[in-house]
Amino acid sequence: MIPFNCPYCVGTEAELIATAFANKSISGDGPFGKKAQIQLEKQLGVKKALLTTSCTHALEMAAILLDLQPGDEVIIPSYTFVSTALAFVMHGATPVFADIRPDTLNIDETKLEILITHRTRAIVVVHYAGVGCEMDTIMDIAKRHNLIVIEDNAHGLYGKYKGKCLGNFGTFATQSFHETKNITCGEGGALLINEQSYIERSEIICEKGTNRSRFFRGEVDKYTWVDKGSSYVLSDILAAFLHAQLNEADKIQIKRKTIWNYYYEHLQDWAITNNIRLPIIPEHCEQAYHMFYLLMPSLETRTNFIKYLKENKIAAVFHYLPLHQSDMGQKLGGKKYNCPVTEDISDRLVRLPFFNDMSEEELNIVTKVVNTF
Ligand SMILES: *Cc1c(COP(=O)(O)O)cnc(C)c1O
Image 1 (tube, rainbow, N blue to C red):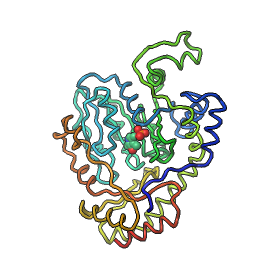
Image 2: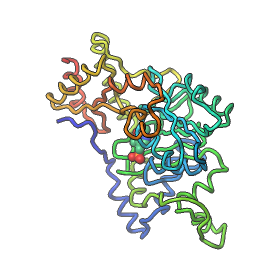
Image 3: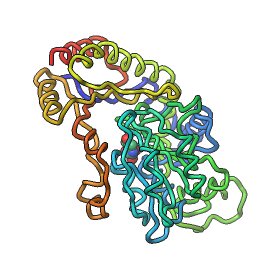
C-alpha cells in the first residue's frame, strides 16, 4: 500500500533530543525552543515567533489576544480544518462562515464585505494548500473596517505572496508542526506576531498568564499571575526535533516541489481528457508545496476514483467537510450561510499521496494507476 502520508525524519532528531536531555532542560522555552523561534523569525522575516503545543493553540492565543466580547463576530472560511473556527469559538466568538474562490479555494475576498457587521472583529484566512490568499485586497478591507487579520498558515510555511513569506501579512499568523505538515515535530505549532504591541501579552498568555518571560529576562523582580492564558509552550524535547527539521527546510521544500511537479507533469493530459481540474497557482503566488489535489467532475466520480486507487493499493483521501454544515456549525447558526463553492468543492476534491520521502517509483506507480482511471 502507498500511504497518503508518512512521517519523515531528517536524521538528526534523536541526536538533538539527546542533547536536550544532556542540557538538563526539557520543559518549555529552553535552548532549542529559543533556537527554533529565531530560525522561524529569520526564515520568514516575521517580528516574533512563539512555539506552541499546536496550531490550534496558537489560534487560541490569537483569539485571547482579541479580547472578544459576547456577540463579537469573526469571519472564517467554511472550507478549512475545524481548529480555524474552534479556537475562536472557544474564546467567545460567533463564527461567520465565508465562501471560497473556485480557483485557489481560498476565502473569497470579493464576498467578504457583505459579511461585515458592526460586531465583526477579525478575519481569519487560510492559505489553502499553501497558496496565498488575495492579501492586498483582504488587508485593505480589514484596514477600512478596523479589523484584525489572522493567517492560519498551517499549509503555507515558506509559501509567498508577491515575494513576501506567508505569515507576514496579518497581525497574527499560526503554523502547525503536526505529523501531516511539511515540517513536523509530531505535534506542535507557532504563533507569529507582526505587531510589536502584542508581543509582551502573547508571551504572558503562552506562559499560563504569568510574566515568567519578563522575570527571566530580569525586567521585573516578581514572577506572578497577570492575565488570562494557558499552558501553550512547547517542550524542549519537541523543540529539538523541530530544530532538526527546520535546519533542513530548504531540502524538504525541494523534495516536495519535485513531487508536486512530477504529479502535475504526469497527470496534465489525463486531466484535460477526463475533465479533471488540477491545482491553480496564480502568477504572484509561490506555493508551499503542501499537497496535490484533484477536482473530480462529481461526487460519484470521486467516490469511484478513491475506491479504484484503494483497489490498486494507493491511499487517496478527500478533505474538509464544510464547517457551516457540520453538527457544531449548525448549532452556531450555520444554516443561514450560503457557501455554494465550498459545498461543491468539498464533494469533488481528492488528495493524492504526498510525503517528503516519496520515491520516484511510488510516484510512477500512482501516476500510472491514475492514468488508467
Ligand atoms: C493542521 C491544521 C490545523 C491544526 O493544526 P494542529 O497543529 O494539529 O493544531 C489548523 N488549521 C489548518 C488549516 C490545518 O491544516
